[in-house]
Image 1 (cartoon, rainbow over the protein chains, first blue to last red):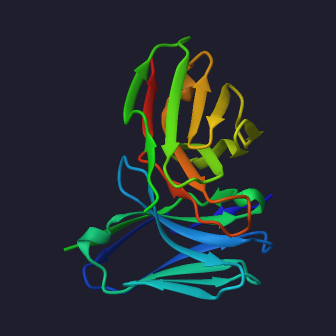
Image 2: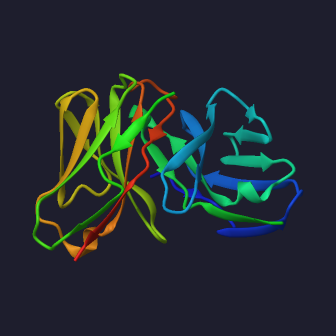
Length: 111
Length: 114
């Protein structure tokens, strides 16, 4: 059974810092990996989708990488801003588009 | 842009009531999903559907049923609500059953069962 781990559970950084959020998974036979953002009390917003054949994806200040063989993904956020404060969830895609989620990392960016 | 909407943002029901949570997507997606999200447990899949009138159990289907009579609408039904079903419920959709499709989520329904 696929397990997805995100450590640490919470992170606090000063504004302007570049940061890396980590995600690990136990079964490397994945179809894709998706990073989401969730604001308190809200739904999930898709940030980046990496297909199993890809190594990375970029959108603005965000860059996500995927290393299937080692069961790892990272989300890099450049020049962090207070508006980046949210919970970031990693989810691994299996058959029938089913996702297995990590428990998320709650990021706080201090002004 | 894909839009997934859920019928209520907040809902308060009493134990034993029958509860309907509705989800609608506007992008002709074949797959639809219902999750619940609880502190410390993360998101867990309740049911999903890959076509009209088709459904499959997820990881925690007990106490729930679903209905998909039209492609754009997927309903989650709590036959007899219980307090342990107090949770955030999230609906999602994706294009089809092909590998690698992105999931898009609705805003969530916060259900409280008293």
